[in-house]
Length: 341
Ligand code: KG4
Ligand code: ZN
Image 1: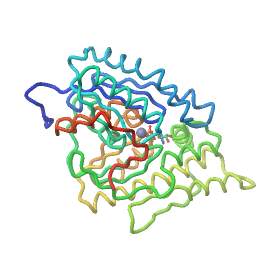
Image 2: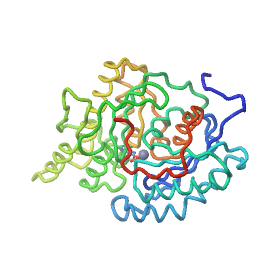
Image 3: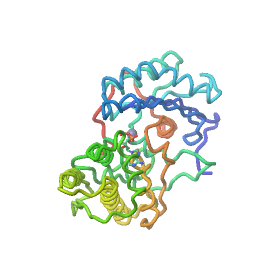
Image 4: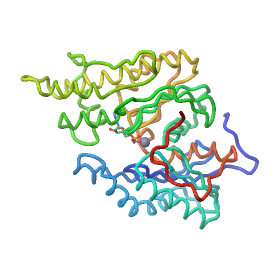
């Protein structure tokens, strides 16, 4: 096993994630062993509004975050003595939501005299690929080509080593998850849209219609807003196709572009592995198409570690911790933080 281990024994990090509508805490050992991972989802609360309401999310975090942290420590069966550092997401995300998690982490770290580590949420998503879920896994090799597809981001990133990210491309308009959520709303499939479209498309099977793909040649960028408009026009036709047919055609278009461009970039940059990350990486068609078309190994976390969780933050924090990084207590939230330029 190629994981580094200090002479002082295992490193255990208490990690907190609160960038959007999930309040989560986890205890992670040596960047890969999950001692506990607790996620309090607010989906049921936001469903009534058809999307995440930032004010509601941060107020709810105030209520749930500390009990979630206590539960994570309890489930890990360890006390504060065994915790080496406290980590929290400091961006990107909703300012109010991030503030609740980062402030809690600062307070706990200060009171317990532990170092603090602010972690980039997108880096966290990528490090979900280091977590052991079913037995110990080999850590991914470098260079790795990462596709980060979440509700707010669609980034193609070359990871040359721990903490070394070059962003090759990104969406120029909607994120993939955002497109899923908006199209689901257009089709009356509810919130969150990703799992609903995934299900409808799976039940339908291959679509009989083809929707446009934005290839943006000569770049590693993506665009999904034209596809969303094409769906809108379809629904307004005198005799529109069925909802499940449109869902299947939409998903085929999204998956085709994501897989094609990622596989091409992997070949161009001689990456040794593809790492899928973010909520949309839970999509069954995306996982299947990558397995079918990739020419290198593909890592993808189990669905519950693709969507927001704190275990991934603890994994990312470990590699920064052993590299000697510490955050200052003046660290502020960065709602617009990106992975790399
Ligand atoms: O990473 P994530 O949990 O939160 C952000 O950082 O944004 O991603 C949430 C996004 C939502 O847009 C949701 O619709 C999408 O991930 N998603 C999916 C699936 N599960 C979640 N999209 C497609 N298929 C899924 N099965
Ligand atoms: Zn996320």
